[in-house]
Length: 352
Image (cartoon, rainbow, N blue to C red):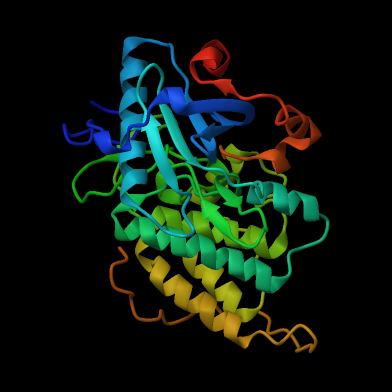
C-alpha cells in the first residue's frame, strides 16, 4: 500500500494497542485549526486539556486506504519519539473516526507570533533560541530515521509563555530508507528543498530519491524568516518560489546578516544536499554564535557576512499547522472556548 511517500510494511500498518484511548473519554471543544487532511479542536481527555486532530473521512476506497495508512504511520512515529521540542503525544482512536490526541499548546503558531511583531523584528537572542529549539527537535527526528518534510512556521507552536517552540504535525513525515523511492513535491513549496521539486513533471506523487537533508534546507528558510521577520521569496507565489530555488538556484539575500548566521543559513540551503550540515552541527554553530552575542546593555558593532566558506563542526553522534490555537483564532475562539465541551460522538457530524 502506498500513501504519499512510499510503500508500507505490514508492521507500519499496525497500531500498538497501548496507545489507543477510549473515545468516550474525549470531549471536543472549539475548532482551532484545519489542514488538507484533518481538522484540529481544543478538547479534554480525562483531566487534561488537549489538541484533538480528527482526520477527514469520505472519498474513494483508495483515498480512504491511503488516509488510514498515513494516520497509522503518523501515530507510530509520534509514539516513538519524545523530546521537549516535539509536541507530546497522548494517544489515538481509530474507531469510529481516526483521531490523534496531543498536548495543547496555548502560545499559537510561530507564523502568528512573527506576524504580530511586524513591521518589527525578533530580538536576535530570541530568534536564535527559537532556531535552537527547532534544530533540536529535528535532530531528534533524524536520529530516529524520520524525515519531517513539511518544516515551516505554521507547524511550529509556542508554549503559553512564548519561550519555547515545539514541532508538530508528522502527517507528511516518513521513515528514511536507502532504497525506496519517495514522493516528490511533498511539503509546502516556499520551504521545499530543490531536490524535492520535480525536474520532469509537476504531477503530484512522482517518486524520486532524496534524504533527511531536505529538512535542513527547509530549516534554512525558517531561520532566515526568524532573523528578518519577512516572508521569504517575497513577491513570488509559493510555486514560483519553489521553481526559482530549484531551477535558478535563487535564495533570499543573506547580505545583511551577521557573519556567523549568514554562514549557517547559506550552508543549510546549499543546492547539493551533501554539502548541507546535519542538525547536530547546526546546533553547535548556533550555540557558538549565541555565546558571542553581547549582553543587551552593551552594543557591539555587527560583523557582516563576507564569505560562505566554513568548516563544519564534528558530526554529532546519532544524527543522520495544523494545531494552531487561540492566539491564531482571535476573540471568536476565546468566546467559543467558554461553551460546554461536546462528547466525541455527539459532534461526529460537525467534526468530520
